[in-house]
Image: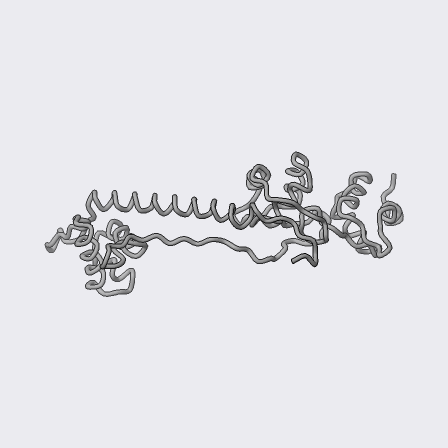
Length: 249
């Protein structure tokens, strides 16, 4: 069977409303029936004056949606990239298991973005994204901050360069400022974290085993706090969101 615009128009016309709009799912069905790439159907639809409406993945249109579902979210995450984007094609794969409405609902109520519409309607949709940020530091009552990101970096750089002077140069600060940070940390924690060695051939600085333990524990604390905050953020800001019809307050 020869595929041409006349045949495509006939199939699309079966599903078009009075304004020439065709549901995305119907247009995809036409692509399957005619055994054509959906992108070619989308381009033909544009040439023929048809428009796609009601994206089943919540990228445009007025289809309703329900609640966030962790099970669906976990499956979608398997296909997302580092920017939390999933292709339309992969989202449809997940929908084959869970259903379009459940996938649409979870995408709508999460930070996941859909890219590369199979019909060519969009490459990437831009919409505001909320995310939670965390910052961890240690304080001594009445003194203030004792250890945080800055002092952590100093200890790591001393371990890397073996010299307080080199660390000061790297950070573009004075030797005295770096040394003061070390002194504040050691005095408040009552531990020795940096050992300086004098001498023309053996000069330099090294961090102690206690400093390495401090670095390891603090980084673990940061990771666990961030992990909990992200999980709790999803629970509070996405899981309880429900569909509201337009016009509802």
